[in-house]
Length: 205
Image (cartoon, rainbow, N blue to C red; front, side, top):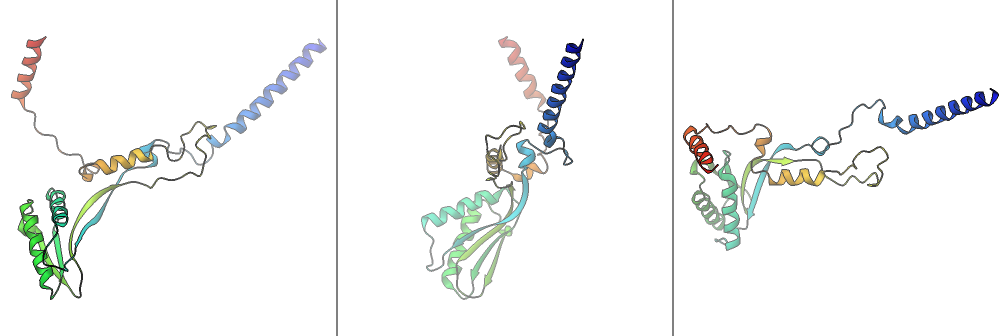
């Protein structure tokens, strides 16, 4: 009987010890901070910010190089889908800058930019011809948080930089950042096309 009692006390002691270890192990998972985000789109959410796109073209001569003209054409392609104004600023009292600004305006209109969207302004002093328009960008928090070792997984949580590069890639690839704010409206259903597709599917079955 005494042996059974000793065994029972020993078992209770071991159980209490294990319970204490378990409590200490998981104490940091149930603290007062509450839920901590872990998924990449929660830790690194993609936000939409507004900023300026600037292209500076030297006005030392009255002409643009092939590379500079290509840069203006690329800007026109990017700005064509937007409704913002494009500002062409040039230094005042500079004939070369005036000729460059005129060439920029022609390249923009050839790229599909309506003339009423182009504004011309001057500034004092010397400098380049500056082409500017505002647009929205998809951005997220920077990566590089290595405050904890990647191999430290005792709490079964992902490391701090988990999914950060993925979010940055998505933000860089999106064509229209405003889609994050409001999705595009779906096109109306084409009933005739749908009926034709279903008929072809049934014929090939």
